Length: 145
Image (cartoon, rainbow, N blue to C red; front, side, top):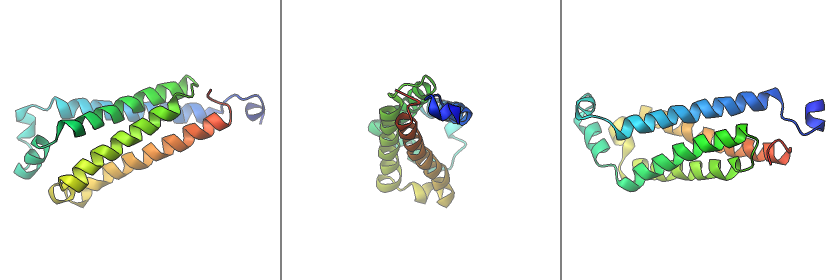
């Protein structure tokens, strides 16, 4: 109760902030793996999946970069108790949405990856929304400023 009265975040704030940072760092590693994929690694995929990777427009890859980098920075700012976390998480979600529009609406990711291919993007989207919601709540409670 005293944590709420003096504006200090609860233990769960630090756990959620740490989990957010780990989550976004994993996303950053996956992004790096995506943009540095060798032809040998790409050869392990089906031809349709290889074509999908090779047809990714630069603007979609850029949206991916914005999403993961803004997510990492948003997580760091959350842990530093800075309100910049909120707009960075919003920017991250916008990057996720742009990338998903490209993959699912413009290039037919479901046809290439099947229904299993929507699970991770759906989780990423939900986490993105939850991080915005949580950081706004933390700001309203005075945990970040």
